[in-house]
Amino acid sequence: MINKFLSKLAPRERTILIGTVLVISVMFLDRMILGPIFSRIRVLGEKIQEKEGEINTGIRILANDERVKQELGIYGKYSLKALPSEDELADLLGEIENLAQGAQVYLIDSSPAGTRNEGMFKKYIVKIDCEGHMEEIVEFMHSIESSRKLINIESLRIRPKEKGSDMMNCNLSIAKTVVLE
Image (tube, rainbow, N blue to C red; front, side):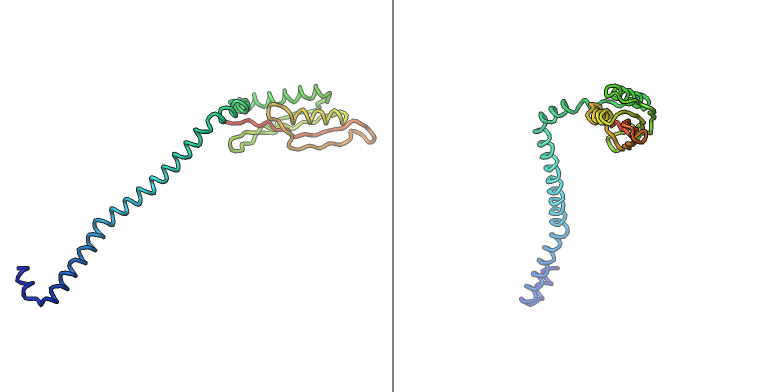
């Protein structure tokens, strides 16, 4: 049947028909078979590049393993498991009391002022009122800032106890930072 149809066509019409069938066949092959295959290969190539990036990152981390272990040894003491809030506040108040005694500063009042979560950290805040000579107060503030327990002064206010007196009143807001695990 196809031979009869082709034999009736002129040679020029026959070449045009064969060319058209070939072009349509190639387009069909491209759209239905090759297109999805190449698309899948491209997607797999992108996934492979993504995984290679993750592997390279992992290799860099493993290469720095010794350095990370050394730094963990240095900073690990700050990453202790947080105690319950009451115990942390009691520990902070006890530490402040010891530092005040060491600097010969008289604590008038000390009270917890709450906690603040800041990402991987939790801050326990206390407010204290104290008095002493300026040198003693400066020594007290220095001992707070250089404490190994990550204690720092967030705000302070110093004023003379009385006009013409060398005794000072000091209001401090002190925070202890705990690294959460």
